[in-house]
Image 1 (tube, rainbow, N blue to C red):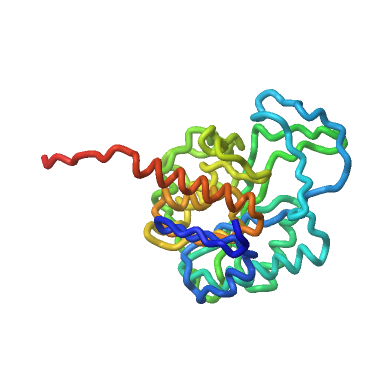
Image 2 (cartoon, rainbow, N blue to C red):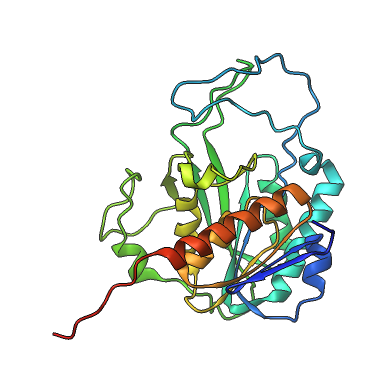
Length: 284
């Protein structure tokens, strides 16, 4: 892939480009929803003595230490980057839309403060409980078993953001022990971090989210026939979920390998959709 290359098929537009540069070229209030999974600043350059072929039972395979240059942010650099991408999302998302931002304890406070400075209102702070989280191998701190997801709207005097309340209340998630059908969804979600074979067969990203988690974000605030913005594509999970929900997607990725992976996954999704048998509807 060449930098700047564009993938455009079946309502999906993805570009190998820095997201800030790409978003700056887009017109204001042109999207109904954004899902951002930015660098957390969680990487380390420490040397870990872990066997290359190790595996932990019930954890989906070998544990991977995040030590990637794109995730090594520090102090003011992380804050400025957060302010920059949130400023663009505020400009690009319609008043009737909203923004989801993934975070951990490394960057959650930064996201919160940046929202306050920019006049973005946090609708909810969701705790994603990962019951099958990896143990802490250093044995020097508690096992990190959750991540934070912020649901944000663009601010202003009128709260016009979309909330598919009835669909969410009626929903049943078999793996979530905290949600009952017909009951309101709470801000703690019990969602295992396992990914299906289909989600991983083309490759993976170190912070790849399970598809069922992203599908829940769309169920809550998505708009069928609307437009979804994904500033940090990674492996393309958000785009896949958007396709299944019926939204057109625009995304950016700066890493060539992950851009290729996202393109491959989207093409496979298109092929599977086209190969699915069509049902003949017989009038009653």
